[in-house]
Length: 154
Image (cartoon, rainbow, N blue to C red; front, side, top):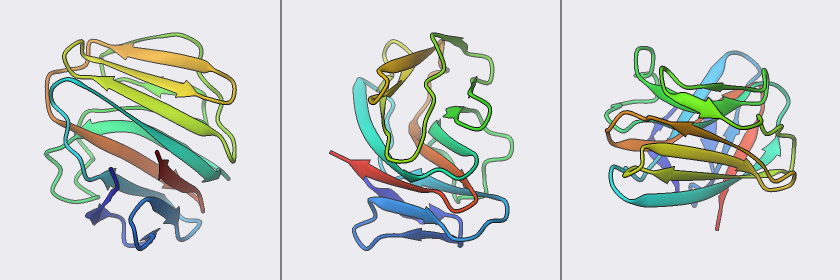
């Protein structure tokens, strides 16, 4: 799994292998989407947080997006470090909110058949679960504010 070279904000810089995304400026939200669509079965991936100077949103969004800025009225399910909050757009959430900081690795586990997304901070072993996700195709979703960086790790 990598970041989609066609679905990222112009100020987000992708590494040559597209596993690292870096926010390029301190102004506004900069979104980047993953390149793998998921609609059935289980899928998990990990992100290493390289820097986390301000808001950093990690999660999933609809795979129907045609570009990085086509996100305004779409369902998104993610965790943000800035407010220690899970945004669920009508789904239910349980568990503590795992605090994130630079150099943490966060694991996301999407179970499309059970309609759940579990987000775990592997440093603290804290996790939260979003349930009752709508049935649809999803892609990994990162939204960076200020000069954050995120890397897919095996």
